[in-house]
View 1 (cartoon, rainbow, N blue to C red):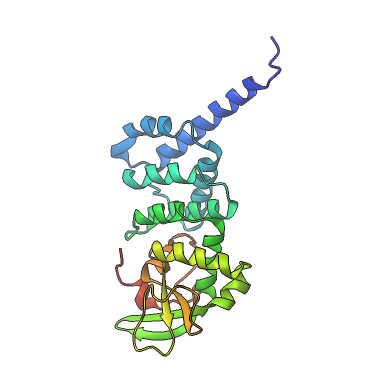
View 2 (view 1 turned 30 degrees about the horizontal axis):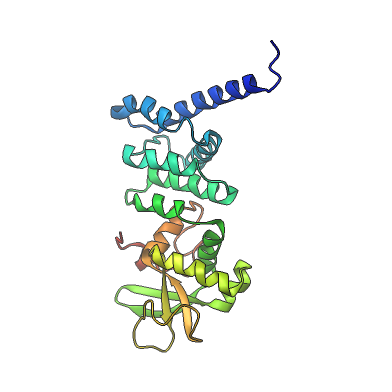
Length: 240
């Protein structure tokens, strides 16, 4: 009987992708947890297979370019990485998931919180976060931290986002702990009050967590180069 609906080809495609995903999962599992491979493959079987495969393939390329052969990831990180990235629709964020997978392999300080943070970001929120890091200028030092900030009107221009929408985006980034609000000429940092966008002296900067998260999502960036406005002291201090 002819397969008029094409379901046969779809089934073959899904089966092929499932096998490829399972093989990729095995490569990222440490030797002591190989038995979990089938469980993980079954758990993500009905998710967006191709998104997971694309992200993991990109991660392998990134790691190969770094000369990394041992690509094992802790099971507690591998499962949510696969599940969360399988739901992603945006190509730019798929690239960030690939970089985050690579970071989970090579970064001893990798935090599982990065996974939930990235899964909580929309494409515009990710763009605004990148714009903050690229356009900030030094503001003040507090303790070991050098803080940076960027004016809202610059973010509006760089992110191509209207001011009203930008305020909503920044509110979510602040909720996630990725940004802080700096009021220039104030003796100390002020958080959360007054409302975002109501003071001319307000600037938006990255928190230490925000700086670490950005680096984890882009392996091409280097401290002092790719993120020129984040001080080394920020990134060398453990912040969870």
